[in-house]
Amino acid sequence: MEQRDVVIIGSGINALVAGALLARAGWSVTLCERNAHPGGAIWTSTEHVPGFTIELLSSWHPLFVGGPAYGALADDLAARGLEYVNTELPTGVVCADGSAVLSSNPEITAAQMAELGDLEAWTALMTDFGSKADLAFGLLGTDFWRRSAWKFGWKAYRRLGRDGLAASGADLLEPAAPWAERTFSSPVTRALLTPWALHNGLGPDDAGSAFITTVIGAAIAMGGMPVPVGGGRSLVSALVSIIEDNGGTVLCGADVAKVTVTGNRATGVVLADGTAIGARRAVLASVTPPALYGTLAPEADAARRAAAERFRFGRAGFQIHIALREPPRWTGDPRMAGTALVHILDSMDSLSESVNAANRGLLPRRPTIVVGQPATVDPSRVPEGQGLLWIQLQENPRHVLGDLAGEIDPGDGTWTPQLRDAYADRVITILERHITNIRSAAIAQFALGPTDLEAMNVNLVGGDPYAGDCRVDQYALWRPLATATGHDTGIEGLWQIGASTHPGPGLGGGSGFQVASRLLRT
Ligand SMILES: Cc1cc2nc3c(=O)[nH]c(=O)nc-3n(C[C@H](O)[C@H](O)[C@H](O)COP(=O)(O)OP(=O)(O)OC[C@H]3O[C@@H](n4cnc5c(N)ncnc54)[C@H](O)[C@@H]3O)c2cc1C
Image (cartoon, rainbow, N blue to C red; front, side):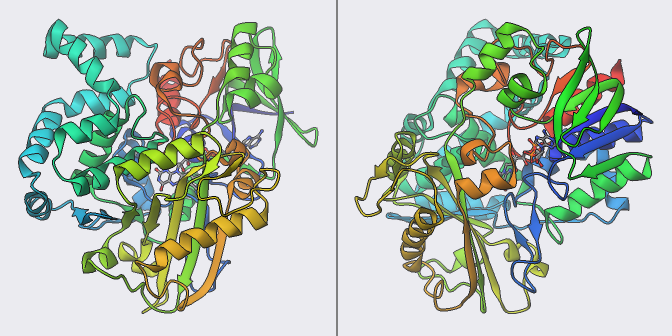
């Protein structure tokens, strides 16, 4: 049987980051990926529409570029040709009360906020956040259940004092809707900022969504919206190359059926075809808790198995991709044509209504539509003079009970191609009011509904793009499980990484970085 130092299950961003760090440090590494290619939720296609580079799933890399994994690997990645490009117009909004942009150029943002009557509020927010930014980013990046977390807590205590710490705890838990109402006078400012909570799996009424909105808002205002030239596959191939150049292997079509456990120690994996691979030092599993404790390692203790059974998945994702023979023609605010990611919604109230509807199993009648325009940042994605829309919806039930608009028959609630396309049509009809040539100039259009997302990546259960509900009881200290301690699984040498674990979903690679750093320290 082949023996490696570490076997990593999966090849998403966290697995690749961990594999690259460990291989670079001299560990022999094998990644086992059940799909035909590595990357997980980074899936770039040049096959769907000739001449167009389409991010079928994730697209925007501020979390990676702003995170510690990139800090550690940037030189090796650049040496393998990875190049990031950025924009001054990362995000904007079109809502019933008007439109606005948030720029990484502070002068543009200041002028915008002044126009909305919210300059003082925005400046105060950024000043306050700036004074605590290390604590905010530190909180999201801390490896809880480690001595370093106590050090972090002590630092926060010394900086803020007892009363300040207690008040910050309350601030951390505030929902975005009351926070935005209290902080900003303009409904446009509220609609500009609060949809960003969706990108961390939250709605504006969820605990913690004000904090997440502030962190993301500040991160975008400071760091823009970087993307890799040529798409996410450039990052994937650079990470794979670090692993392979250091003697590691990335096996595709390698579905891990079982972690071998001998005397409460993980000693390797067995693939679905029966191939066994030994792991001398560690097995890292980038899977969901039900997959880990229910299937791969049922030897774990009963408390973890019971908690994993209760692990909740969140709302489903939904993507629509449209290639256009000319750039999108926006009505209204001309700045939207050059903005990387535009939220289209009625107001913060419609956001609340749609999240609630989806949580209750209903298709929203006024969905919040995320319109991504990758070519505004990386023109190489489209043939010259053409256009590409990466459209995302985050307020979708995993199982559909009905339609808040009373128009679409959900059938038995399964996301069939018919239901998916009917809903995509509603979205495009709304968008036609804002992008007049969205139908007339379309060369190709296709949607990926929840069923498609799960088929593309088994960790996206029910189409949940974040591999687990991100509401606060399943976040931070309590991700992946309320009863578990971080990435530790209770089985020696077996570690859980990936979006289901702290620091949660997104392209930061944080859990892979934390576990690899921990292994390298020991
Ligand atoms: C549609 C969509 C859009 C998104 N957009 C963005 C974005 O723009 N920016 C951003 O920061 N984040 C975005 N996200 C979130 C982000 O992409 C994910 O949170 C992140 O990529 C998850 O990485 P991961 O390391 O958990 O692994 P994943 O990417 O989930 O990959 C896990 C891999 O493990 C494999 N696997 C699972 N079980 C086994 C097994 N038993 N054997 C072998 N292989 C196995 C799977 O096939 C998969 O390839 C988006 C997510 C989705 C779905």
